[in-house]
Length: 528
Image (cartoon, rainbow, N blue to C red; front, top):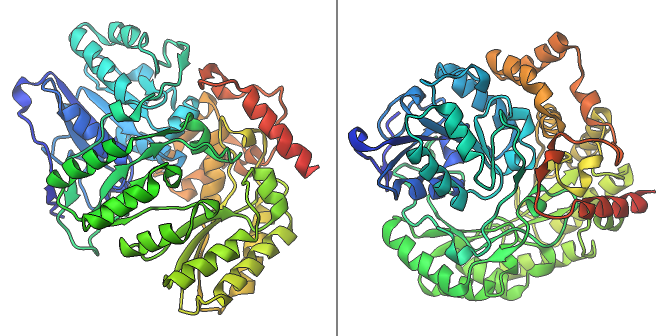
């Protein structure tokens, strides 16, 4: 299919030493809704000595770069952005299909340097350590330029010498050298690059290339989150919480919208609503005539003014993530608000004129009972009864709890498959036939696979390679269980003790790990 885009950069291959392939191992519409792709693309192409082109693993696109249609082996560096564990097999498939040896030990001087980065790989790099030459741990802006400088300096001097020298850069892990590495982050967001010339596809909304977040300018106002939800990878992976200044945000908007052909903005930041000038930002965007929305709000940080501004800005559906309707579970996961606030906010949303509301709940949280699930059903009915009488006006997305590395809940296991199926059936049966609800559940098998990868070390490399070679489907995971004689579910349901040595313990996360133990202990005391 023909893909036309605005703000694409095409450089002359003849005189540029570094050819960098930026690979998002999933479909285009997901990848181009990821701010990191826009940021890295613009950051690298701003250098005269680097050429950066994009790749996606998309059935509607050839496995070639978007810009010049060259194959992956034509590039001397390939960087994969890994946002989710389920993309790990896609990463290996991309190497296999491109004719690049997937294991780093098998690659030679004529093969590209394979780099990995992203939140999933930062929290636990070990499952892919055997496949990567270089892994970026933490936020990449400052590290990337230092890395590129070293690549230029050591051009033509061999892989081993290059890897030895880049391993000296803070935030870069070279698995073959097993160097000690510490997570890095940008201390001052005002000094961090923000993508201004963001790529917008020229396509209709029903095109397979239409981004998940629409044809929008992605505006990052904050990073990190200070609320400390004990299950949340992003909350701990991006500590400390930081804000861009109001003046810096206005400058980004004014400059970015000169170059990016859209009138729509998405406000990015896991806790953007806590920004000290959040209302000022919304008011400014509205006065400028922009359309804007925010992917998620927090129940105890929303008020009438914010909701009115979002409605004026064109947001159709406010989104909240209460996770549970049980006060007991809210305390266990460290969501510090009263369960009654959910209905109060829903009533406020409806009174302002929104016809829809979207909610995220999590099933299988540590300590969860059937009674806790019944409380979710009861809350959803009360919300619908408060005025959301239209078909599919209460949109609910459920997820299954998956233990994540470097969070207080890393010691907990998943709920059993049998228990989760029972809870899903309870919800489906209770709300069946009520047209006011649009209820969605993830694939349980995929969630179990995600938990397996998340908790594993480099010992699963043969399993990942087997699955990738067999197509990466769920059936290939069944085949892997038979071939390697293990059970995915058995690997993910066990609760671990403090003596357990995690594969990711060698990574310095940048804060005292006693924080995680203390928070886990608090949750455990509430469960017992």
